Amino acid sequence: MAEIVIKNVRKEFGDFVAVKESSFTIEDGEFFMLLGPSGCGKTTTLRMIAGLELPTSGEIYLDGEEISQRPPSERDIAFVFQMFALYPHMNVRRNLSYPLVSQGMPRRQVKAKVEEVAAILGITDILNRPVGGLSGGDRQRVALGRAIVRDPKAFMMDEPLGALDAEFREHMAEELRALHDRMGATTVYVTHDQLEAMQMGDKIVVMNNAVVEQFGTPQEIYDKPASMFVADFIGSPSMNFLRFEGVVAEAAQSVNLAGQAIGVPRLRQGASGHLVFGVRPEHVTLSDTGGYRGEVLASEYLGTTQIITLDTPNGDLKARIDSTQTAKVGEKVGLSFQAPKVTLFDEATGKALRSELNHEVLAHG
Image (cartoon, rainbow, N blue to C red):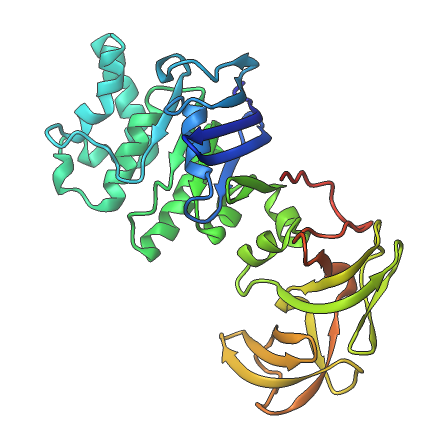
């Protein structure tokens, strides 16, 4: 078992706070994503789990044991870096075997383990080649193999696919997820790519400005974002934000946009002042009727679908509609929204207003 528990972990570098009181649990065998923009604290969090950085305060548990002040050598965690970190003077076989030789494993066992891992990764045919002449994908497989060969309790991966081109990166992401499914090892993976996180992760922590904004499954985070930052960061195109001012009562099921009553999930809390109506492009429908209307500004053809940009009384809005549907620039159309998929936000705090349909998703900060 390799459950990892983070409790109120904080990291300071002088006056700079890199991570603020973060708490979440990584279940045994999960593929866990740390997602956020550059400088948000995700890599620092990963390095604290691995022992490459020590937290200023808080606790880190691995298999129920508190490890926050232990050195990396006592944590049994393997780290995979973005830039491969291979030994250029060694061939592939020696790179893979080095961790085992360093531990004093007998030569016969080292050979068997290296060949087992090479077969899993599909690199048996390059075991005797120098690493300097390998492609980026093969070098990344070797770097993964050097981590896997140790049978650690958990894997830490810091944007391991970041140096690959886009097409091969997608292929390697599929391979990496398939490898995890075969091995079932706890994996913590840092990325700034929301599509990569959604594609690969069992759970995602979204970080921003040193704070954990939200923690949950990809579907929870996509469907019920805890903040405007998460709603904007996740999704392509991101969630639409229509701003309005008013009062929304507890248990309300509609809001007033430009004089029209627009359905929303039944709220569990009221709010007033500057509010934001959030809806994703695929949950917007164009029609010939409807009191809430918008003017078509542009259309982007994407094959089976198209993205329509509209000017509405509450701001610009994007709708993802079928490519066979006609929407002419300058045309005014009726708009309707899937009420259960709408999220309301308090603009002052950026936080979502809870509804009865909200998942109980952990959000900090």
